[in-house]
Length: 214
Image 1: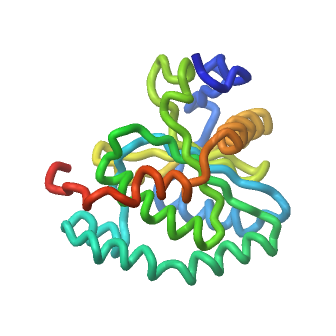
Image 2: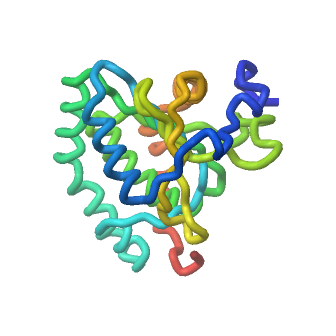
């Protein structure tokens, strides 16, 4: 049984494609930046469920190549930019909250991502971790989707291809849908564990992941 009794009916979280508009990757990225920049005094929420993705950037390429120390150093090099972005969000009153669902044992990707989250959290980002078991009956028909809610403006169900690479998103603007998913992620966030304490206990001591097994 899910720990979140108020969301026990998974049907409340359904996102019928016919009710949304499909966006290409480029269109999604452009619109996401524009909507986020236009928000004022509203909170945003991200729900991350999958345990493997194909990412991008210098740290990701180092990770994939087995250069673990380079990957960690490149995470740390992002600190100043992340701190500046967080300060801008604070000035606009638009904090961005992330809920990361975690399964054990950690996948190599998730180990890499949690090192990134440690730096992001140190820079002021709001990130909490939730165990997959906490979702309980909400996933009897399959894993929940990856979702981003920007204020009260829009919900994006983010899509990925077979490799786990970003493949655009479907936008939903129904007030009820946006509010329902925003409330769900908010509840998970408040029940979750701060990523820094989770990292210290579960991640910091781990040896470099075996990327050759991916």
